[in-house]
Length: 88
Image (cartoon, rainbow, N blue to C red):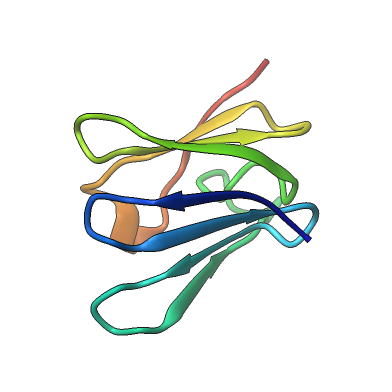
């Protein structure tokens, strides 16, 4: 189930789900990217239950999760899928 939706300045569509992680429809390639929690990867998204999405003035994406705190996906590291997590 989709919990939150964001269209960023590059016209990419971000979909935060309740248990399925984060999906992004890339505007240029028209393909989806999927991000899910991986306990073996400290740079993965911190939780698969996404509550909120926000793009800041620098083009960074902030993700609010149910149990994993806040995640930041910087514009520079977006293609690498490296999230920075801030715990509650």
